Length: 528
Ligand code: G
Ligand code: G
Ligand code: MN
Image (cartoon, rainbow, N blue to C red; front, top):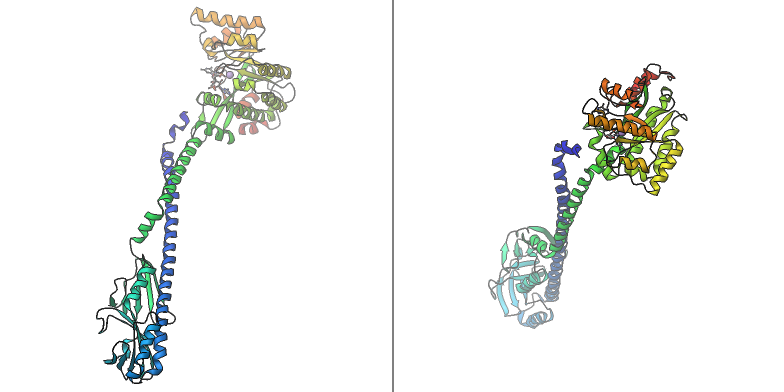
């Protein structure tokens, strides 16, 4: 329909919206999934770190048990207690060696017996724990040393760094883990470093032991999040993309539908944008208004007043014309009823009816409702049938026409002479009026053949006892010719153009000999 032609400005957001609708769920989904992954990583980093802490505490329990058992022996001569030292190594799973010291000197070891090496308590965090990078037995090989003391003597037990390394590697194969004792730390490389270990790229966790002076730091490397995405979420990602595409397509479809002529007509009907215009029909002799044809106009919010040729064919095609005509009849009745006093008895109101409406029994109710707005006999309702769509003489249609006739509703054949079935209609349906098409009226004064056709139509209507209306009368010559040929009614620009209800009513009120003016009519009329 040409009505949507001016919608260029709205085009951009209409093209954009489906993209937005498609991309939005994908972005939201990705955001939620990323949040989920980060939460999972945080939880697993936390759990792994806690496990490592627990395991190292378990080793240190073993060391503490050995050292505390030997503490009462510290100070005793080495050759008396050496076997006890070895016994503790055997008894405690993680203990590699046990030692005794006295006055800052290591004087007895489980490995060598008598020994002499300085011991510095400042090496030990809280006087208890030392992460060594190696000793004289295994230089360069890490050791964790536990020290129990009483006064200036005490016992020392050690665990091999390999046990720590195994714990870090096995408990958290894909977590970056570091064990920290004071300013020394060891990672999965098995080397003791000084300072603070580097923080992990994500899910960084630092957990201290509550029982021993050490802590474990955990977290993930940079590429771990990407790896998780790649290994866990391809299916979900594909699902998201499909969902996004479906959402975008659904949105596009909905937009197209909302923009369709059908939707536009439905919207206009709901917004009550179809207005009746009235074109008077004059009577022969005095040319006073004997009636009017109701012509639909679309009061479009952007396009202004739209002529029916632009939308009636589509409305007929889409089947919406029936509801539109019903609304138009209602509008007409409501506009005219308050001024019914202006109308003479038997005032013709012509409504254009489409073929679809003629097989719809609700037309009876529509006509009855229309007539109920007026005092009995005041208005003569005429249904004008065109041949744009063929009317079939089905039992329903014939029944409908019979009942309309009984109700006093008249039938006029519109644009008579232009269609292929005009004469057929005359045979099949009980017709009351012929409306001579304006193309024949325009021929008045032209070639003889056309004039013969016109005269034949007039004669035919007289023979069939039908009323006759000539449409499209524009000149006085046409008017006088039709008058001479006893045409009952005339309609055309010569008398009046189609006009809105307010103007129609106010002109009707000022017609010579107008009677029964309602109180205070003209100002009200102007408001329509
Ligand atoms: O005034 P004019 O341009 O109004 O009308 C153009 C065409 O639209 C005419 O052929 C007329 O029959 C048709 N038309 C006007 N109003 C209606 C209506 O309410 N229903 C139908 N079916 N056709 C109409
Ligand atoms: O329903 P129908 O097709 O009869 O509708 C009448 C059509 O003719 C309407 O579009 C109306 O505006 C138009 N019309 C009415 N009077 C004249 C006239 O005198 N001249 C011309 N050209 N058109 C007219
Ligand atoms: Mn008509």
